[in-house]
Length: 376
Image 1 (cartoon, one colour):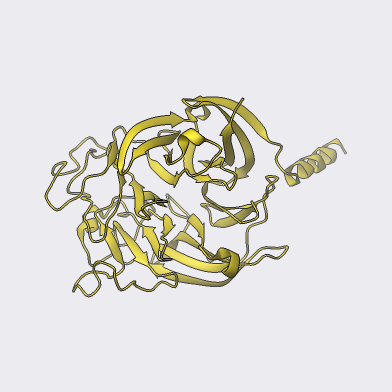
Image 2 (cartoon, one colour; image 1 turned 180 degrees about the horizontal axis):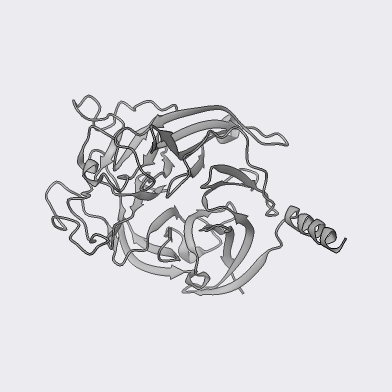
């Protein structure tokens, strides 16, 4: 009877919303209040706010959850296609269409099973507003072409531009680094597609023989951060270097960002990774990190809750276990501050909430959603 009562108590506790856990941390702007909004997520990868304040959160193992404003987790959203979960692959980014209020459309990026390996894929569907949420009219609108991944370097961030077209980042699958310079496949590229997966007619390689028309830019290693600048409308992205050389770039149409020919890191075994750091026809990052932070999800801050941070760029650090704040002057980085390092957790994603707070996703077997606001 005692064991049974204990088991029932555990069930009741697991079914109730998480009671907020709060701590105070320091920053250059003063104290920060860090609240745990939700926990118990299996390697959460991305977060997107719904208009009513609830959140979509992806779990790498292939589940999409809705987190209530009270922190309660929904059952996995039905209708999600299968993903190839293993290594670095699984269900990754999620974002709402700019017209979500009217069309209920969301996009997500995932590792797709293909011939015994994995490829980065982009899908869309309509999220129902029923008591039991599900995805309807699901369609995979893009599948990466090229050598398949054994489990690493999928990239897999989505950013929707003002014109509605979608940028999707991809990696080099670790084993195929040289393919990042090959325009006949999508390995190590950023692509740009329409909301239904078509090719915009102003993409830089449309009509060029031997080049995939979806390609926007190339020479990328493993881009896991992407965001649209709120003023310029340009795409910004971060990508992982090897041992050294994480990069922040502003990818422009048709340009070559150098991997693996140029860069600032070395191979994991200590050997030389690049020919050099500069080469004609190849672009320089606007910032690089050596040692790496393993840069992940990113967001431009436009809220009023932190007035001193308006216009700053925030990005997660996995290996660095930090939230990085960058002060910008146009397209130049003028200062850097590292936040939340006291948590000692891998930061996978960061988003601005409708009320101006920052929401952070931590990567782990029991990952958390954290709310960062001004402290007392």
